[in-house]
Length: 357
Image (cartoon, rainbow, N blue to C red):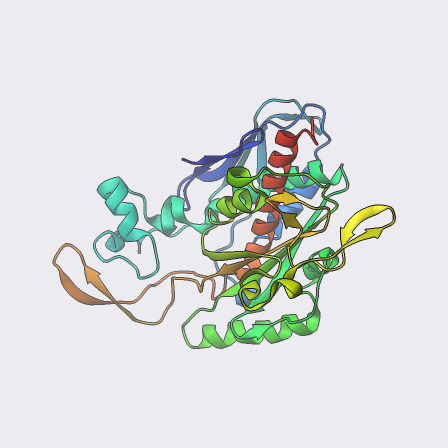
């Protein structure tokens, strides 16, 4: 299925080297003011940056086909279209017989037969996230009307990790540098890590942290529609995501209950916690603290370095060198995608929970 959401439904369409990619967002309340310029600026944040991104340069101009008239939502499905113009598909035909390590070539052909479109990764490509970011920009605006802010930043690239405590402001400030790090100093260290991998014809992974503040107590459902569950499903739809943790995350396994439990306190007449190892969620439901989660982004699968693969037609091992235009690290470009995906989930849960009409 290419659709996710209950009250606010997102459908993706297109393919990496097809005529276009885009999204349909259904369920946006009528009369909502949609800042089209803001929407475009969010999509622009996802574009590759200079020496740390792919040489593929798409304009990524968002065309609004339906659902918004004179800057306001109509209540009908909002269709967001982005054309593909800078494509080079010549090098992809061979991957049907010689699948690229780390890619979905083998599994895609197994599921969809030889008819599958593997050009640029087809529907498995990170190119598909353009629609997520465009639709997520609208979800962000909906949440911001209710005082909820969503912002992310790069917490780690390779072995370079930002160990400082950060908040939602860190995500906002990360827009000032191409790496999307919380500070310029961290950005330079992370950039060096990316370029070192690039110089060796290799790639490197990273960690993106997202913080959401302003959420009310009570969002989410126990067991099967928890905030963590709904968020995780969406995050694993983002190509390259291999793991997710909330609050203290996996570090909680090495803690005692007396360390991990967050004591309740009263702040300005509201119940809060003295710290936030729970990541803003208890029993699958928001507790009024900022929701904090991190996603692990794998190294870009397409690398210029030679690799071993298998010709599935002949059954023989073969050497494979991938030509083309690829990011040495996709974590910086994943930041606006993670923000958008989180906003879509929380807007949908808000509608389901009655916070948004």
